[in-house]
Length: 159
Image (tube, rainbow, N blue to C red):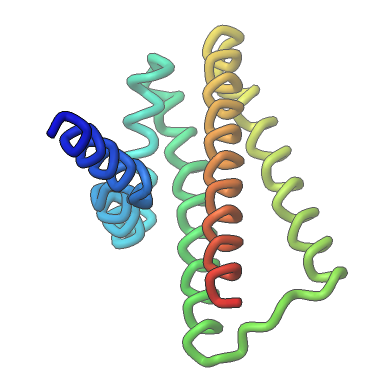
């Protein structure tokens, strides 16, 4: 009887471990809610978060709001263009030149934003901002790696 009970417990615990880990639905909901915001709303929220994190003055808030609004507007335009392209069925892998051009434009924009922030923020605020940017970059890389793993698993299951 004891052996049967131990075997049953072992099977149940293996079953629980073997289940694929699913992300909580809150992450998708939050992402969807952020996509539904207008650029002005997104810029306002981002500026308020930065104000709390960096203790910005009113003039700094106004200048950073302009930067955030510009970024949010560009991001919204890119998302709209990407969705339209996806829905029309014209999605093709970008060529090497297109990828290079897109990456150069992204890096140029990043350098420009960094230069603007350096002018607006004082030394302590700028150091804190750079640290948070690095942390966000690391989180982005982790998410990309997770996405690649799940794509590999799906491709292997298809084969």
